[in-house]
View 1 (cartoon, rainbow over the protein chains, first blue to last red):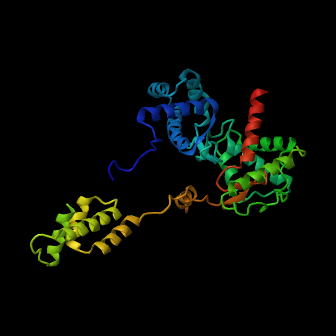
View 2: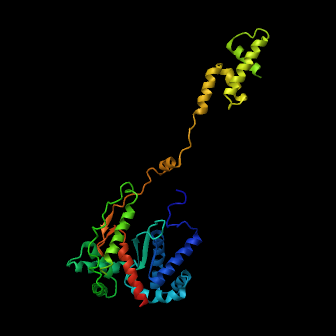
View 3: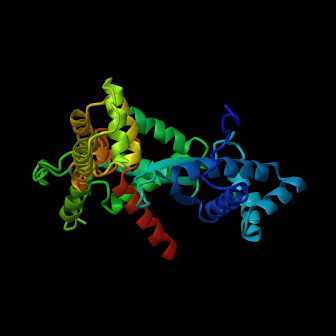
Length: 222
Length: 131
């Protein structure tokens, strides 16, 4: 094929625009530890972010210079990259960032994703795993299922005091009563009602409806 | 012009022109042809002429022209018809890959984080950062 296979996503932009976009994305990522964007942009920004953390771990004059040239607010980020982040990922052999799919945020229903720095304060998988464990304990199950066990391993493996941190997070959830919070998915929504001729196209709405019903139901419990 | 046409038709049919035409015959011919051209009003005479020479049968010819001219849609395709045709096979798909969220027990799409859990966790983070 002319031009060969694409080695990266062009994101419908010319080179300079794409470069600026990715620099913006990683600048935000390192500032906030977690960003939500479209899935394709997240995957592209992930490549760059991983390379930047590698620069931080390398910690040479040259790496400092190229990091300086990448960020839009280098003076706020460089100390963090060459300080806490370098220490956080010292033992981790790559995989410093994580992309998690979330429901579409943009109104064109483009696939969205969360791009986050692993083991940071805004580690969504860590928080969700804690939630799952808290809920299971609230229901009286002590054994974790396969996927939760895998997630626990992912979340605690390279984290400083990982198991303890997870345990604390679970306890906190228990205290604030979020483990038991979601009792049961509602059977009260009257599914199948009023979808007659629209049924096929309204499936998404159906899910939303379920959510709405849930919120209303939950409000008194909180 | 119609006279000339008529004579050429005669010759094509193998009838001898036999000297000059009688005035009555000529008049009748003029009438006949003027009628014919009136009927096939949309066709220019220049188009008609060679066809008449080759096909020789003006009555049937006019029928053919009629049918050719009328082989067009009678009505404009309505907006509804057009949209139905163009949207055929493009209906939204059902979301079938659903699962239960292990964090809150609500239904969520498989391989996608539970929007409810994500929202509440983000809210907590927001609270923490303001505290």
